[in-house]
Length: 220
Image (tube, rainbow, N blue to C red; front, side, top):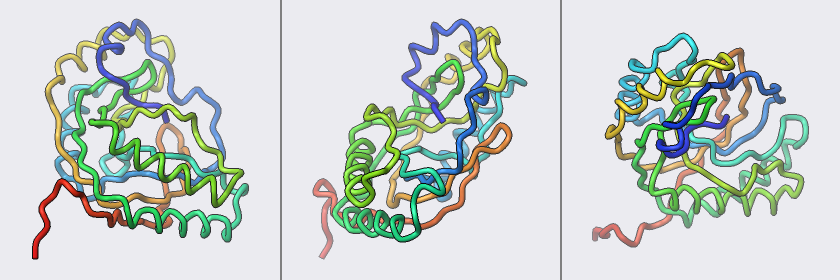
């Protein structure tokens, strides 16, 4: 599910690659940020997708926009009791994590996908690190992803190999400067599966971020 990276490296891309050519994996449990209640992000994605509507891109549906935070395990590798233990541990740590503020924009990509960067990256990285820690503590066999993390929201996946990138690069260049602000108040545990040229997931549970942000004034 690799998606966007900072825009400038994408500008030197010469050929696109088929995101879906990679081997399909079993359905997997993940920590996700989902955006059902973020109409501004959906509107921004639709605007950018209208410029990226080339036949070699599969556009992410509005209800499928997401940020991958961390993988937990493939289905069948974790029992219901183990998954419940992970969820309980994560719910406890989320009580001390405040909602996070992100700006989503800086459209960029890789040869296989185009999407928005989320910045500043630190709040999302801190959330991920906290979830990684409790996940592997509760379930040591967790299938965590590599430690490096580039918070992003993918809006288009390339579906064909060896496509000249010039049109996509020019389209992404024309869309610079578009961004929207998000307030993230929960993280979702999902069961993710890959469909033909799309991703879909079942939400297992949502965990609210209940910590207090010291930078926000309190009311009495």
